[in-house]
Image (cartoon, rainbow, N blue to C red; front, side, top):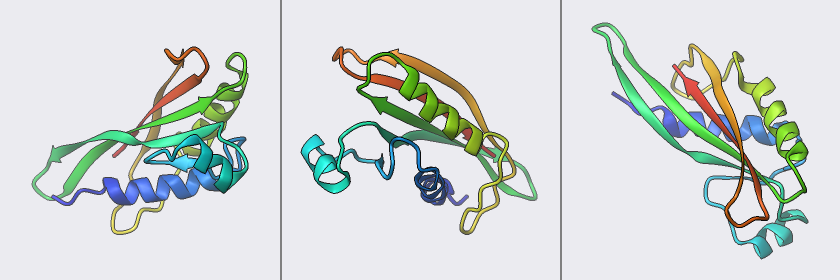
Length: 135
């Protein structure tokens, strides 16, 4: 079975970057240090991470299928959750039950399964965690 998660991640990052949310082009797998984010984009926050996930093979005789799960996180440093919720809501609208062109693979269904909001233990950051599934 081939692992489509790398190509799905590429397509997700392209989709998220095109949204022009308050995170701008700060869409990361590996988050650069704050001073580099400021130098590259003019701001350190908010930003979005796409990374943690899981691939679950689906056993079928005639098809090479899998379900792929990604965690997308929105990180902000504004007071309260409004900014995190705006960005997460825009991401959900752009992904939930939408099509996604993935090089070398077919995505039958894309869903945002949940969005969880939390305060980071550092006391400064707010986080919106979107759990997303592709099959």
